[in-house]
Length: 174
Length: 130
Image (tube, rainbow over all chains, first blue to last red; front, side):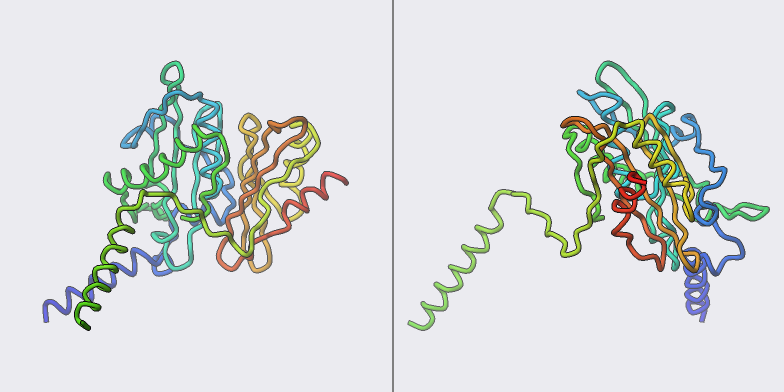
C-alpha cells in the first residue's frame, strides 16, 4: 500500500517536472520565446564563468573561434543574443509542447582571449531559464556537473573542429 | 560430410564477422536527404549593403529582429505565422572568400506546428532586387 502511494506521488512529480502545462506558471525560457526575446539581457561574463565547463583552443584566433561558435550554434538552436565584442552568446531551442526537458538545454557561452593564438571557451547552462516566472521563482531543472560535462564535450568538439577546419560543417543531425 | 559443411559455413561466417570488427574506423558518409534545402547563397553586393538589406528584411512585415550583431554578421529574426506558430531564422553574413560579394547562410528553427520555410533565401533575394 505504501509502495503504491509512493509510486503515485512519484509519477505526479515526474509529470509536473516535464509538462509545463501542468504548472501554475510558465518557465522563463517559454516566456522569452513567447515574447520574441523582447528586452532580453544576456548574462555577464562573471556569471557565465561560475560553474562553467571550459576548454582552451590553441593555434587559432579569437575571430575563428567566434565564427565557429556562430556556425555551430545557428545549426542547433535559436541564437537569442550574440556580441563579438563582449564574447557572450546565448542560444536556446524552442521549448517543445510536451516538456522543456526534451527540447535541449539553453547554452550560454563566453569567449576569452587567453594568450597568443589561444582562446578560452566557457560553456554554461544557467538555471535562470528554468525558473518559474511567478512571484516566487522556483528552479524546475538543475543541470548537474556531469550533465554539463557531457553537453560541453558534445558542443565544444564541434566548435573546435569548425574553428580549425574553417569549412562549414553540418550539424543538423543531433 | 553434412556436419563438415555446416562447420565450414560457421567458420566462414565468424571470419567475416571478425574482419568486419577489425576493419579500420573509416568515417561513413552522411546519407543525403531527399528534401535537401538550400541554406547558403552568394549575393553580389558588398557586406555593408547586404547587412542593411537583411536587417530591413528581418524587421519587415510580420517579422521581428531578436538579435543583430554587425561585427559577427549575425541577424536572428522571428516570423509569426498563422495561429501563433513561429519560425526563427539565424542568418549569418560573411564577405565571400572567393571574390566580391557576401555569402548569406540561413538556418531555421521551427516552433511546434510551423512548417519549414524552404523559400527564405529566394524571398531575401527578392528583397535585394526591390
